[in-house]
Amino acid sequence: MKKVVISALVVFGLMVAMWPSGFAIGYQVKERELCQKVQGNGVFFRYTAGGILRGENAEGTLRSRLYVDGLKKGMLFSLKQCFDNTQN
Image (cartoon, rainbow, N blue to C red; front, side):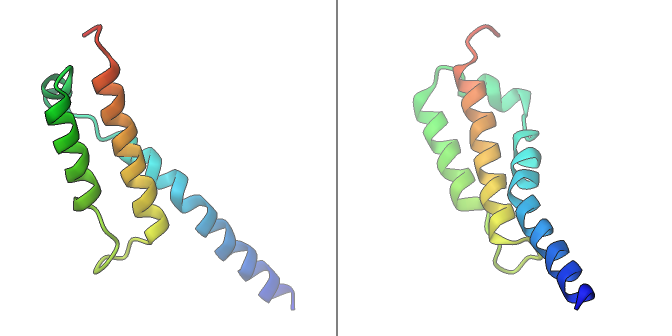
């Protein structure tokens, strides 16, 4: 019984950690050239954001849907930071 409970807790812990880990990896996807292109260019920003949403999926990979959702959100948040940062 203890092994079942411990196994369930480990699996649950891994599931809970997938979205934040995907977000962290997605947020690190910052290409300086992409940031320079996107800054102040609403059309390119929307085009790039749409590409991120369409381009990442979990089907046919070992990644879970939770991880891919976090990855997309992290990349979009990173892209938004590039767009909003007008100091560079």
